[in-house]
Picture 1 (spheres, protein in one colour):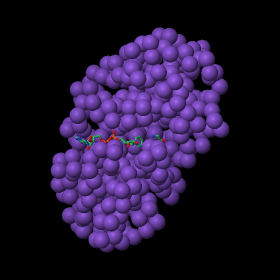
Picture 2 (cartoon, protein in one colour):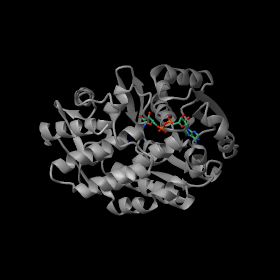
Picture 3 (cartoon, rainbow, N blue to C red):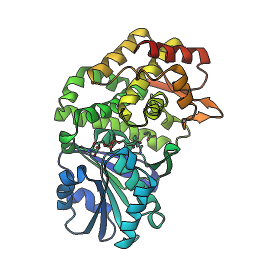
Length: 361
Ligand code: NAD
Ligand code: GLY
């Protein structure tokens, strides 16, 4: 097992990465204050991993609440069901919430913990690769609103993250590749050595080779932990984590969050950001090709769907959360491993990138 630390003063917390950690009472117990534990999961993950988690919680009064599976259920109605259940039990202020699942479960359970009686202890037990390398770390919690994704939420840090890599064995291939997109993101934004390592080890990762996977998760979490420690509130460097996300969110929104996984859309978005960076004279053509090659070898898409015209992109990009004073701020690359946030890329260069990706379909 590897243990990393997210350094946030009194709210500092560990991230444990390793095999078969879910049933390890020694990892869970120090972060549980009272007798009550409320496990929130969904009807896909719960039947697979709840028993394992319960083995490490035998000393506690454990309650469970299952939410339906899917992004469309990350909403205020499902959150209200969680509160109904917690109040009916009733859960006390010492009750600890454990999120067992992917990013949807983690985001909704984290937001429930942030709000219930103005905040109760919370542990993340992520079971998708995306959740293990990204959404469980850093404290962003939210539900979607009909007018926008993740628009209602709170920044609320967990007390611990327990990333049990054994759970990834049951993850469908497309979900696994989508998680790898976020892994590649860390290499691109600030870890050039990791990017080169990924180029050499992507086949082992796709085979879910245990050693390669543990290294990739640990290195990704280390990058995220460092960023969050420096800029918890995203006033500066944390924004780099949005590489590819503005283009990607446009794809997800235009396809009604149904046919594209988040990581797939981010993969295309990262390549579009790379293309724009090349047009601005920063990134070399051969580096754009390296990024494209790595994404393809990961089994990720490198073209948006054909309904994404430049106008469609611009319409959806204009309502992204990253718009500041009417200008869309984009994460761009100087080279693989060095990203920056800018809004001075020029309308023409952006339009050329959007047109190039439309023609490429
Ligand atoms: P998800 O939670 O929908 O999980 C994907 C699918 O895999 C689901 O059907 C789930 O039930 C299933 N699943 C989960 N673990 C499994 C396992 N071990 N075996 C088999 N199936 C399993 O999706 P996700 O990609 O994990 O998360 C996406 C969500 O995360 C989005 O809502 C996004 O907004 C959010 N997110 C949040 C942050 C953050 O910082 N809070 C960052 C990135 C993404
Ligand atoms: N997923 C982006 C962040 O946590 O800031």
